[in-house]
Amino acid sequence: MTNEEMNVIIGLEVHCQLNTSSKLFCACSADFRGDAPNTHTCPVCLGLPGTLPVLNKRAIEYALKVAKAFNCVVLEKSEFCRKNYFYPDLVKAYQITMGDNPLAVGGYVEIEDDAGNPKIINLTRIHVEEDPGRLVHMGNREYGHYTLVDYNRSGIPLIEMVTEPELSSPKEARRFLNKLRAMLEYLDVFDPEKEGAIRVDANISIKGHERVEIKNISSYKGVEKALIFEITRQKNLINRGGTIVRETRHFQEGKGTTISARSKETATDYRYFPEPDLPIICVADWIKDIISPELPDARRDRFMQQYGITANHAKTLTGDLKLAEFYETIADVGAAITASWTADILIGELNYRDMSLGIVAPHASEFKDLVTLIRDKKITDKAGIEVLRVWLDNLRTGTKMEKPTKIVERLNLARESGEHLRGIVEQILASNPQAIIDHKTRKKGALNFIVGQVVKETRGKFDPREIHAMIAEFVGK
Ligand SMILES: [Zn+2]
Image (cartoon, rainbow, N blue to C red; front, side, top):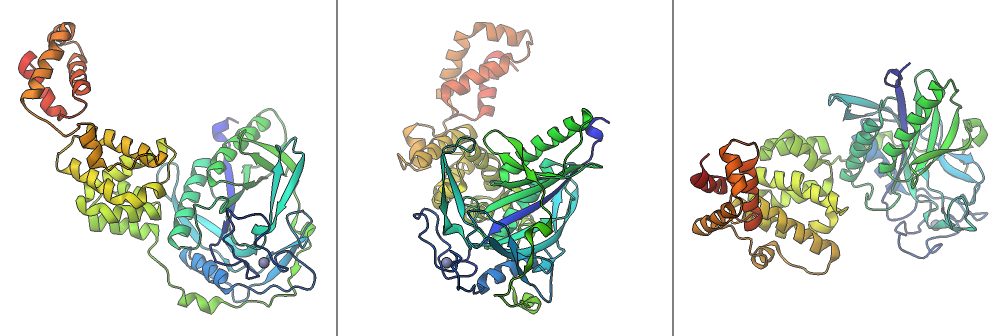
């Protein structure tokens, strides 16, 4: 069987930290990042004997918001239970989670398959559970000499969302996670800027073979990498006549590989039993009072209708809540030109610099000024990109806060036309006689070469069409 004929089957378990102000079962502040280890703790989240958990109502409300947005069915009775296992980050030696009676079942997410067609990914269940603490390995994983434990994360509320095994490629998995992340951000139940706010376990198999679980991929961007590696490993093993063993593997982010961790536990290994310290919760009726905000698909449709922009621009701009809000604050410059400069150019330049929109968003009005200069033909597109790059580099390093209008002045990039161009064209033609001969003998690319020289000399201050016309005056079309 060739590699292409082997069907890949992927299912995901996504853990997402809810951004409630306190933890799931105690009043400790959940906003612990940047604080000293073990400072956000109390007897409850340290699991001391005699303490009792008190359920955070807000966490359940957030989970219901998610359940409603994904069209899940909330169960009449949901039950917390104990998942028993020993690990140093788990103070009580059990995790409070949900078993056979989760918060909600069913539901779905619509994504695009690899051919660009709509595809429904069904959800199995959504449940609420507590995060364990965090282990900090000093040294590296192979040769660490000691490990520190930080319980600040112990008891942070998580929702776990489980998909049916319906994803067919690593790219589909990435699109699913992007969509999921955008929806959770729109729902205002999680903060994507927080490190480790989304963690993913992936089940992956080749049709007809055993399934392998990759645990705790700490960035959702790492998921695609982990899946690509694991698919190749499994296909190669099958092609060599080997057998896939049902096991759990760890993803090594730095190396981009997975390694065998342990043989797979079954549910019975965890001795699940109902949590005796918490009552059964009945929240099915609450769902009708939950108000859903505008979600990404609805906002995409509105953008197309309200601003008349293309489907692709609308999809990109609404794929991230902050980007959608950024666009709406500046769209009055002109919906189409703003969409293009934001979705096509700004995002590309941000990605290139590994910058987040969060750095640019507070300076939206300056970006708006830049788009206005381009709209009013005060600078050319080429000069616009040069200004954008200088402006972004300044924002990134934080060295010089210079507005785009000032950058245009300082670099003398205001658009020019007329006689000044004539002089430069004459000069370029005089110093490139071979290019003129090439152009007259219809050699391909000769005219573009001359135009390129003039653009370079004038640093993009003239409209390329004007340059073309001027050169044609001298050497013919
Ligand atoms: Zn606590």
